[in-house]
Length: 348
Image 1 (cartoon, one colour):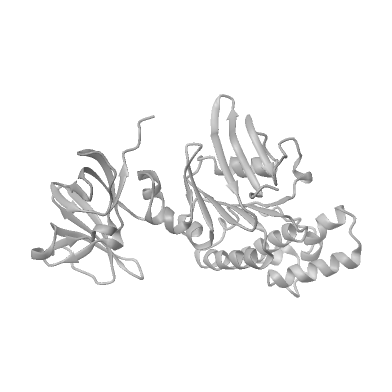
Image 2 (cartoon, helix red, strand yellow; image 1 turned 30 degrees about the horizontal axis):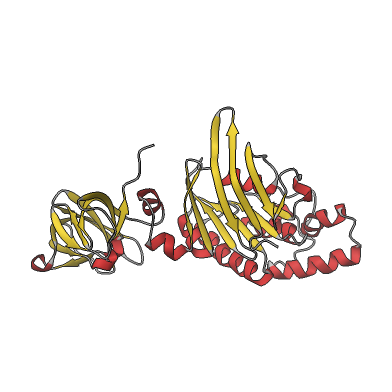
């Protein structure tokens, strides 16, 4: 048996001469919470729909536990899907909506009730069985849609931006609930979003996509701390991305200053992209800073202040819990291990 539950091998999808995804190779483990992340039009939903059987690829294979399922229709695949638009049946109550798939399979009524009682407890909707779905809040409707998918006991649950219609506070709560459900059920979740905070909060693995290609796949910590290119660095969290010259191992030139870093293996005097996260830049006295600058703007973000500092030919973003006033002269300092060096992206 394959060590992976699902393997996408050289999957491409062409729409009338336009490539939505190109040579996507992706391995998904059993019981994994994997998130496909990227901007609109990057190919993440197309990839999800191909896994679900709602789209057929132009080329490539989809292996499920080592067996090619490319020709199987959606209802024969061991997956269920929750869409952004929940597609609940308005003329049915909560129980009837959740029971729909089980009735189609001709499951005995007693077993249907047993399964629904268990799934309602899981999604915290016990007692809502007879409620009209139209009387429910957005978060409750979303839980009904998830329950309807989970009650069929799929091996994989596909979720296409299911929290997109919810307000911020409810969305944050549902992120934690979804992760808890996935851990409790022990099934594979494949989740699509353009929200990087959602991806970082819930995922075991994040797959960052752009222009139909996988840019980077890995654990949230590695994606955030070790982005492979400027696109990933910019898309995952806030970043200062600067043109630099790698003078030699452990030495980079930024904005006219030679600075020690922790990277090696680049060519001498090689042009590079340098990433420094806003929280890793420290505001110090003018006499202690590597860069000298002036605070141009201050924005309160709740847990921190976001300050823009003009230093030499660069405008730097800094996050700090301590506010400095606009117009203040400051120094900027960064530790070598907080400087991340990346190769320049090849021109397409």
